[in-house]
Length: 49
Image (cartoon, rainbow, N blue to C red):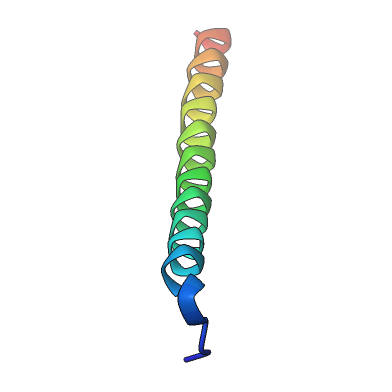
């Protein structure tokens, strides 16, 4: 591992927070896509009925 010196805790915490935020954004995007897809399928189903 790279020697980060006295800032190791701060740097690693920043990396950890960044990874968590990226995972959260990906999860949110997937969830929003799923909701939008379901709403679209529901609307399309009403047009056929």
